[in-house]
Length: 190
Image (cartoon, rainbow, N blue to C red; front, side, top):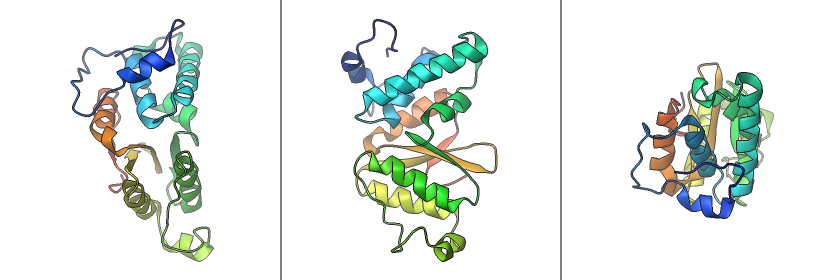
């Protein structure tokens, strides 16, 4: 497993992302390496975005903790550098923002989620549903295209997550667990 550095060549590094069924030793991987792998997994086919987010993550850790990567819970700085590009974070009950953010994420791969109504921004529809139900719908629709919606435990009255390729399910779960992130499929909201 490699991480980017000043001599980093993204084209060579992408091949080192975790593959389904690959051996993974979380005891051997540094937090920085795990963050890099997570960014690769939530940016499938878009290594440039993963690299930009990794640089932003490093800057954030350097600014806040003097570069002590292994002394921080990575989810908060990660959430901030991926928000609305590779991940979502919405308050509980904010159904409109969930639909907008998941639509934005899915559009990266030219996917359109069918929310079950003609106009998902309709106030009556939004009031009659909730974020967990919408995440379950998005999960089901994305699976039809071989993608998966994931949600992680925020510890707050909020919902957060990202999208990966379906085939990367085992890898994202292993990386998230190694980073101390409690992760579930989007169909099983916290």
